[in-house]
Length: 114
Image 1 (cartoon, rainbow, N blue to C red):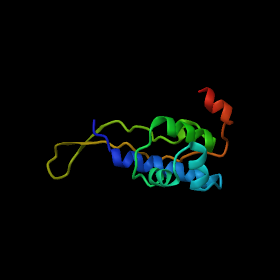
Image 2: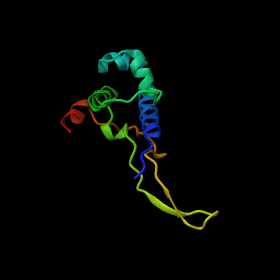
Image 3: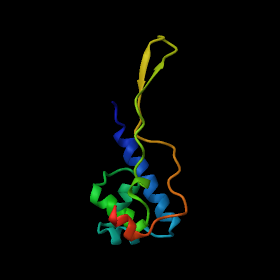
């Protein structure tokens, strides 16, 4: 199964950015609460830097969203016929175009208990 690493981290960054902006927080505020430098957080939001699980978990708590709201769903590999050869071609992607989060969010304590 192919994994689009760059696409995955880009999507995580987009989701972080959207959640942060929805809560009218600055990158500096989120980075400080998460415990990382603002420049690092900015690189994560821009999809230029990988994010470790514990930082993603802390960001979910700060942003008051479930952890899975920040991570795209895996897309299973699919076989499709190509027009040129008529043979099968594998297509896979780590990102989806799903809506990031709704307006009804659980409280921080509920997120931490998961």
